[in-house]
Image (cartoon, rainbow, N blue to C red):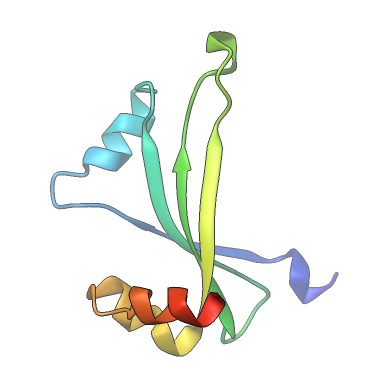
Length: 92
């Protein structure tokens, strides 16, 4: 069994667990915010993901949006100090 089969997820929410309850109640457009990495051991890259849930019967599809950060940048993402504008300029 290879390390790449391991999926690690840390879900983010507020004190009222609004995102959790939205998903539990299957509210239309409920979102999940999570940090995800693959393999065991210390991650090198971490995906920051937002998944918007929609029931298939509605004709809408669930959407997963994500971007990748280096493990050393996770703290900046969590504390809202990640230099997003600088990163966007580097991509152009």
